[in-house]
Length: 236
Image (cartoon, rainbow, N blue to C red; front, top):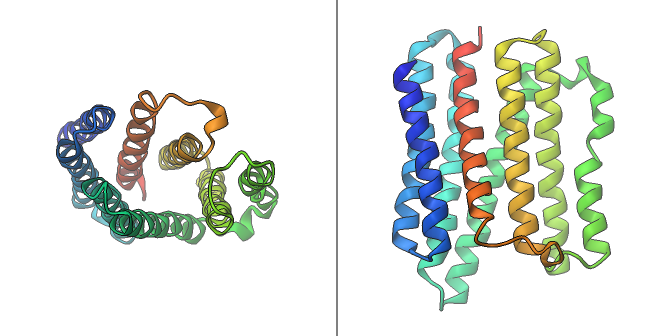
């Protein structure tokens, strides 16, 4: 466990470094810091699987989601290398977001597989909450995105909401296990990071300081990924 915590600490420290380099527009340093953070949380998952081989199927699922997140991270960082080439910038941004989105879907599927929603169907009542909030922001003109991308964002946050519902279901069906609380914490932090990032970039009316936002978005995201990896230790 000590090695796990060391790698987790490296991941979180790298996330703060990435945030700092983001604020000073040091693109190469930002890329290296983000890559280190992403590789670190993948190592956390691998180490957790190694130390709890009984969790192999669950752990591999988590690791695959983390890999998608890492690929998305890399692509989203590459757009900064082409500030004057809109086509490259848009390509890396769109593809990176899409790959990142697949990681979210994997988490949602994983949680629904390990905790079938049929056992907690009442939780589905909360599924429209995040999409409806985003829809309200779009319809009131607070979101500065083209219409098609705005509705894609609504779909994105429907999946984010699904991940949280899956995590709550996971906790309830695990009878309050340590893994359940860890997964729920990870899912809430993940959703918070996504929401904060989206509102920072596309809802200028909120006037979120762009120099402060990276220090909130990246660390919460990395802590969430480390927690997902940590949950592998506690799955029986």
